[in-house]
Amino acid sequence: MSEKLKWRKATRVQLIDIAFCDEEAPIHHRQAAIEELKRRSRLLYRRVNYHKKAVYPR
Image (cartoon, rainbow, N blue to C red; front, top):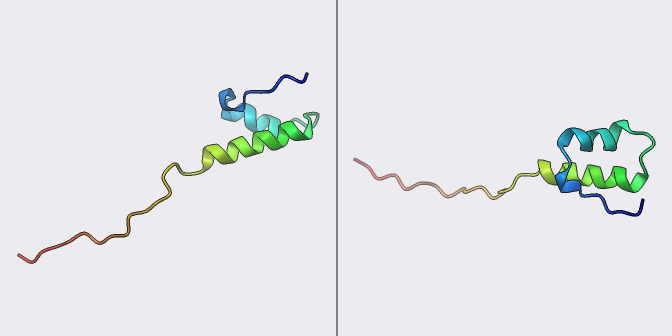
C-alpha cells in the first residue's frame, strides 16, 4: 500500500470522489486529490495584456 498514486492520470470524477465522497480514504490521499483539483482548475496563462491598442485617426 506504500505505492505512490499517480494523480495526474486520474480523471476529474475520480479525484472528486476521493477528495469529498470517500470517507475511508487516508487523509494524505484526500489532500493530494484536492491539490490536484486546484492545480487543474487554475488558469494556465494568468497574465492579461492591459496595453492599449494604438488607434490612429482617419
